[in-house]
Length: 284
Image (cartoon, rainbow, N blue to C red; front, side, top):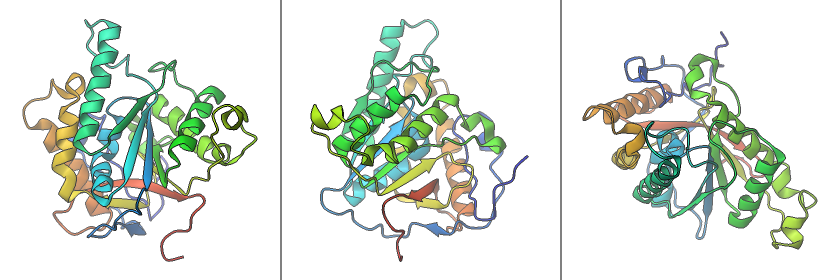
């Protein structure tokens, strides 16, 4: 078993039914974490979140997205599939995907994400980091021109294998490739320039959730209730849980992440691998 390095912050997984009872062991603090009060985003700043399925962004980053909204970020959520393999067994697939799309839009509204987009032609459970998928992601990156991109980990976490869904890894890999070098290369899919007028764009930074070695924590104590409310919108995914169970699990994961990141007792956090692509880290 590979053990993350000394600066790693363990990432609780939202997909493990037993995770609430087995929080990850505390490790030394991450080398950086957000401070309170949070800085305000530059006027007109955009963020782009790219995930495989409805509910992925909310389990992994809803508290952070709500924090960004409070800071002034205008966030776009791009969901690659409509979650057609994650609904009710006796539900028609068309109805299922419509339900999951509606659930995601409702959840996003709770945390202040107003622009929610779904890609067509990509199936839940069948994702690969193909050039077709990369092109679609590059298109959206150039449309949104975000100050930061948040996505899923392209790296498998052997300590918490259930967090490494193949679709998550595929979207993470496709997104990282799209951020660098494709989005900033005008010769990558030149028709995006000639036909759509989408000029090349350099992504400043990437935030990766579910990474085995995160280096950045966001204090979500003040936005935790919005995270819980957002996830309650995904009735098809969490409606079967006993009353209060979802909040208990989410709080356990967030407490463990905050402790491992060195935040004060009683704080809650979400953790990420923060990668500086075309921008310098703060203080440099």
